[in-house]
Image (cartoon, rainbow, N blue to C red; front, top):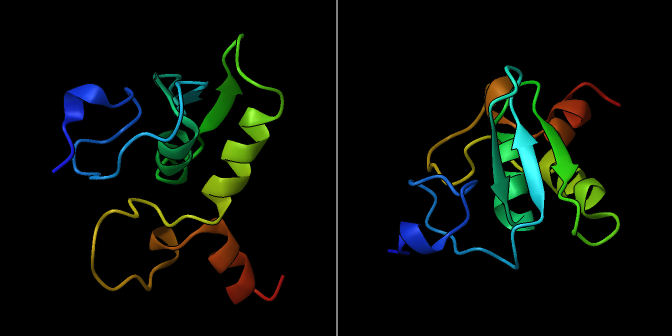
Length: 102
């Protein structure tokens, strides 16, 4: 198991994956509660939020928020949880669009 105390604040305790790179984004939920994170965990967190937003930190590389947003669109919410995923709320934005013929 990955040590939680060495990962960014956006990494969920149940998510066993390590950080990829430095903390570069802030992910906010619909109520404006947020967590700073690496690109990897920022995307995983954003994919799991309804109405979430992502912002680059001031010293982040150009385009990082767009990369996180794009990556999140292809991830299923709570992608670290195993099991069948068939409901729209359990699928990625891209999978839901494909189901709707977009």
